Amino acid sequence: MKKYLSILAIFLGTVSFGQPLEPGEEELTRHERKATDQQQQPTYESIIVAAFKAGNATKIAGYFSENVDLSILETENLYSKSQAEQILKNFFIKHKPSEFTIVHKGKSGQSEYFIGELVCTDAIFRVTLNSKVGETTKEITALTIEVN
Image 1 (cartoon, rainbow, N blue to C red):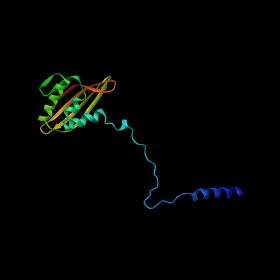
Image 2: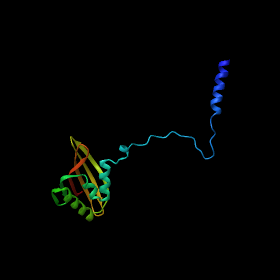
Image 3: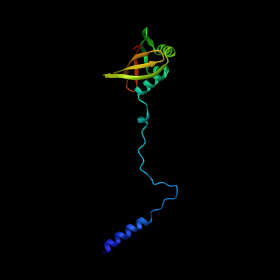
C-alpha cells in the first residue's frame, strides 16, 4: 500500500508543478524540420522552364557552354556563348513567350535533353535543348527552336 501512496504522491507532485497557460499563450506544438538549403534551390529544369516562359535569354545563356550549336528558325551555326545569347534575345523580342512546357526528356550517359513546347503570342515552337552534365553544373551544348 505504501508503494501505491508513494507513486501517487510523486505523480501529484509532478503535476502540481505544471504552469497554467497565460491568456494568449499557445501550447508548444511539434515543429517540422526546416528544409535544407539544397532542398530550397530550384532545379536546372525549373530554371530553364521559367526562363523560357519569361523570355529571359540571359538566364538561359548562363547555362550555355563556350560554343553552342544554335538553330533558331532559319539561322543555324556554331556560335560563341555571347553570340548565341544575342540571337536568342532577338528571337524573344520578335516572339513574346507566354508558356513553356517540357513534353519529353531523356538522359544518356553524360548528356541530357529536353523537348518542349514554347507558346508565343504569334506561334507555337518546338524547342530541343541538349546539355552536357559536368562535375558541378550542366552546360547547354545545342539549342533548336523551330515552328511546331
